[in-house]
Length: 255
Length: 223
Image 1 (cartoon, rainbow over the protein chains, first blue to last red):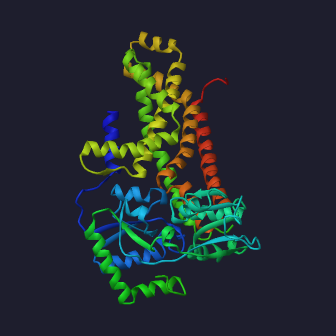
Image 2 (image 1 turned 120 degrees about the horizontal axis):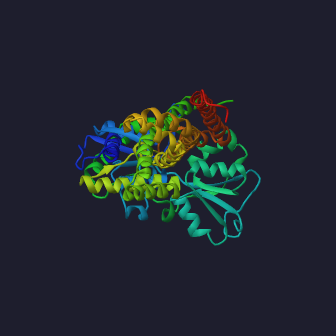
Image 3 (image 1 turned 90 degrees about the horizontal axis):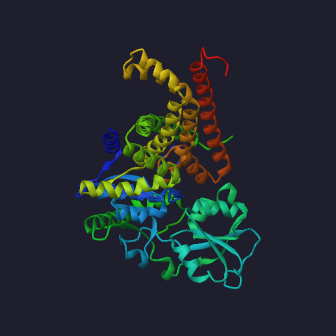
């Protein structure tokens, strides 16, 4: 009796995923902890630049989209396990990731930058960062850059989300944080607890680490969805929808 | 205290926490009843199975059990069904918590049954009562009284264990607080709020359990 009870319980709460789902219904995953690109609003809904772009693309490609939140650490495995069909979460297009997923064309590109406490005046170089504690989000191009360039001189701490890295910076557990310059600006520096912090060092955009911009990830071989999204992307760039979404969040174009 | 608009979401999470805990308690009690019966049965295999169950579940960290069921469950069900089947956070959480509750409840109920004086059962049998009547009139009321403190404890632990399901994405109280904490950069505020809500649930539960215990001991001489 116990076994059938458990089976019934499982059947009632398990989501049955059909192998060949209609192209019309697309599930999109985003992180939800990366303001202003994707974040959870107080009412519980997902909002942000990525979310708006995803909705606009779906509208133009005539797709019925649902947008779900997924923690960054499991976002690519979830795509490959067919929990969703596309990732629109400010994921940078890199060679490393291209081995696992296919990307659409880029939908924006912004440089990375370091942030420090005001007045610390760190020099961004191997000598200047010796012995310092630098934070970044795990599994990102920023973490990779730090590990390739500063792992031998500085103490690198990785976090499950950018928000947690920011929290440790304000708590004084980190000397610097490396992340996307817009995310640091809008999600941290312009917020009340970021007022004692500032950018330091140049904008970092070397394609070797910082990729070719943020793209939408789909499963390898899912050419139908990739082409539909690329076509829709070209459309919204041309007809002004992209610019409208851009101006909603930023005073300049981030393409 | 400024919750920056996240108050509503915290309440939603709190409601889900209560619902998951309550459902898990119901299933856990059912499993526990069967487990206790197995442990007290004459058959050696049943006893061994029940022992293995409680030892395993009480020996592995609860978080690990949840993760095993969440990830392993997907693999198992996919293999059984032949196509991609997904176990969602709620399903895995309910299943894991029910199994956890069942193991602890098995022990509580077993001890309670063994706490009923054997003489009473023998007397009832001498009076010619059927097995079912003995269970209904002699055993169960006293098992209830003896098990209540232990079951109350299991309930309180269950309430707190729901916070573990936050790691597989279920948006109950713990996860909602973490989301709010991250979004507003105010971890202490929201974690303190979450703690207060859990505490509120606990105080309410303790009051309820005390009332139940008082009623269960009615007529009994002061021990």
